[in-house]
Length: 152
Image (cartoon, rainbow, N blue to C red; front, side, top):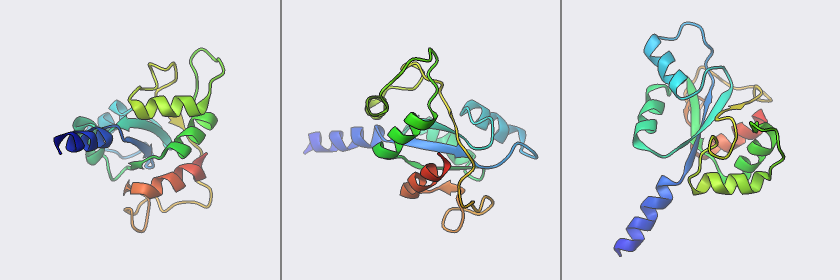
């Protein structure tokens, strides 16, 4: 019975969360700006992948009125890597293999990629100043995948 609990905890910990900066760069408080900077969200419509760690979740909670975040699934992650990942040494790569390694716990920098993604503004627009049920700010849960696909 304890093995089952341990397995569930490791599955929860291995979940990848994508964080997309929605708010611009003007009129943001210094502490929010520094938190966004530490998360590598330095421009509007940039995105990062973070693991489900307590410290990072606290940082995301602090900037939840400026970002959209949620759990990304494997298919959308593969599309994102194929369309928007930038390899440092400019060599070819297989997006599905990279997505699998990321879900297992690797990070982009160790795999030879830039640690952030630059996305397009979403097709068909967004409500960028309203929280999740009506807009996109905050925790979008599973609907973040639809938003990411619109931004590729």
